[in-house]
Length: 115
Picture 1 (cartoon, rainbow, N blue to C red):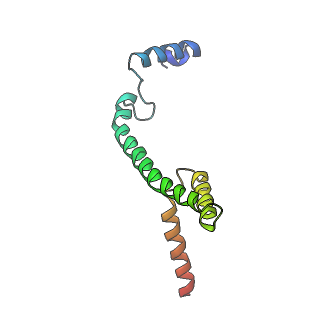
Picture 2: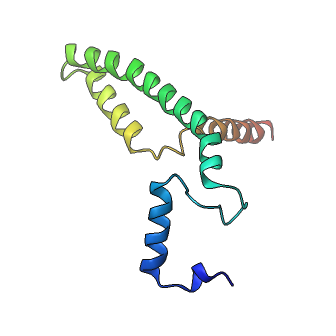
Picture 3: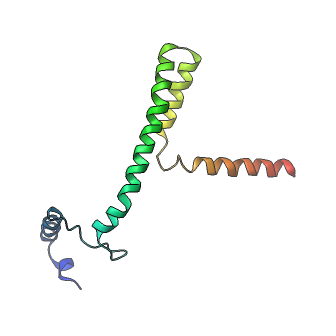
């Protein structure tokens, strides 16, 4: 067994943090690849996804907010408020799966009507 696993936790932490400050994030326990290499290969996709989400959120949110503010206390304002609250309350990982679930639900409904 590696001596790093048998040393006290505070010593392990100090050694890890000193490596981090020198750019050494260690080796992944699952795939035995450098963590820094693994991080750098995935980072561009993460930034692309974050920027795309931000553009969509701003592109939808600002016009919706302005339109709701112009029609304060109207049905549209209430709809925009409820839609915003639902959108912010749904976990981020559920969003992309929603169209798949809706298609599956639609196919189940279509199958029941065919019977």
